[in-house]
Length: 126
Length: 126
DNA sequence: TTTTGTTTTGCACTCCAGTTGCATTATTTT
DNA sequence: AAAATAATGCAACTGGAGTGCAAAACAAAA
Image: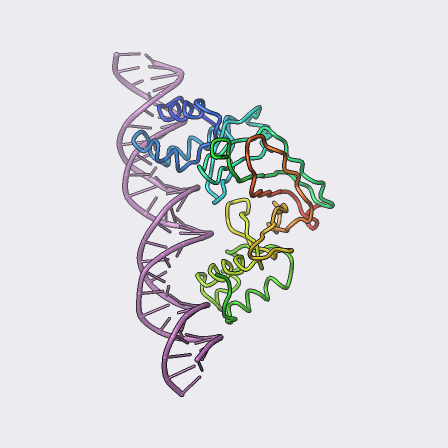
């Protein structure tokens, strides 16, 4: 079950994701809002946001969790097959609009695909 | 720096990866060889194997580390852009020979790409 | 607006993958 | 065989993530 009550924590976290399309790591949020809320709350609210189809989650290059706004996802249908891009210089992570072509694999059914690209982003690209 | 001395632990782990092409998670190795060696040793030997270009590592669906034999990698050149496939039923992970086409991203340089596909493997595919 | 029922939150844990320091042991070199 | 150095084991630590439960916040009813 997703978000039921609009509490202070829910509003703060919602606003944060509305500010930009960039993905945010859980640890960043914990650090950023340590004065406003407990880390447990952050984990729980993000979890519910994902249930609602408002955010989607994925793992960054060291296996840590990131969240970003969904584009056209609902709670019943999560179409987050898009790749994510993590800058190896500044650490910023973005969702890429592009589609990755998953090759047909004989005798296997592919349900989910996670694509993480690493390199230099627009700003760090000299 | 990679492997320098051929110790008992090095031989055991090397043999294990020679037995099959399937990837093995670190936790599996720790459990499997708990009688023969310490988990710290396992982490360190795997690290060196990767330095040597003998193994490559990647993260499974829950962010845990897996290792598999490299195909045509050396310590100076790691070309592990191939996708990995993790079965959602039996948990087995394989390296896929196929190539994933990474779309050209404007104003970004892509150095590394990690592709993890999830679904049903040959055995679990009913 | 006060009461009531339910959801959220904070706290203080626990859990587990992965890492580190250091003394001991094993391997290689001389 | 002795000396030099690399690898190992152990115990402790780190840090992200998750849990149980009592207290607080919220929404709705009275």
